Image (cartoon, rainbow, N blue to C red):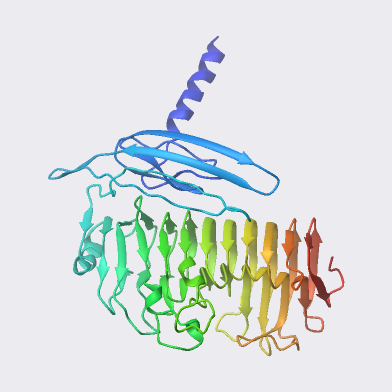
Length: 464
């Protein structure tokens, strides 16, 4: 009896302790951590892959219906939350509704959520004007940026945050038009910091003001990098809703132990042509994440709809990318490698992700006539559908203007594993396309990999 009582007490204590802290993740597809929040905070749905603890006590009811077929998974979630936030001088009650539509497979999947929740301000600094950001960054450990409208040529500069500071984007964040390739609308740096978003927020990059079908390859001047994350240590970026970035979305360089999770990146408005794009999609070079010279970076449970690489790793070590949903772009990429200040990629894993209606699936590209090293790369549990160019693509002849067809040996690629990479490509596409230089590729393995629908071109011995 004593032993049973002790076990019961331990279980109760464990259950009580298993509560997520402020602004932490508390739910989502594949989430195995705490699903309740500490006192005064409530778990609020953001998207299928991410729910977050935001401030305010709440009563929440959730109804979930799931229907499965051989090709489609449809999930409908309805969440209703009522919250109230009170500080020493103010009491705020806010009601908002958010509806989101997310495609989760090759057929149409719709997820609708209704959320009532205030932007979390806590006892920190609530900033409602761009001019007040710099002083808040210097003095506050909890900053809520609410409905910020940044003037032209004005960066939301979060480079000097206090150690362990939290920044919450709330409402609608916008930027004045700035026709400058070197302008960075948001810059983030710091130690042990958290950058997150309140329920219902949006960060709008104003892409339609710039898009001309050429991206960073020409045309009018436009901000080349929308959000720059540099020289962070033990930082977290979670639960951000970003739309219509001008060219590349995230530029991540010089970081260590960075975790990015639960983001929605939506550049779908750039799929259509406009008056400047000559019939091509208006948005171009719209990479989701560009990672360079960084170590121990994790991207997880993220939706990306864009027109270029979903993720591109050009240098760095110990990079983990998992739970991605990539739509419309160029897939999960290593490269291009070569001709840069850092040309080493070591220990990168892409896993448990979907690539849908995209040009490429899994791609490693190295630049012709350059040097570098790519080693210890794993693609595992990647599902492809609607691929128009390459299912698996390894090329050593890459130039931004297009491949040359003549591979070079300067960049070595070794220890690459394709495990359970499956799916289909169009009849004009390549299931597998591997073009290595003479002796510059080694240690490629294929296990449980099956891509069908197209043709194959491979000058490496063990291709499927």
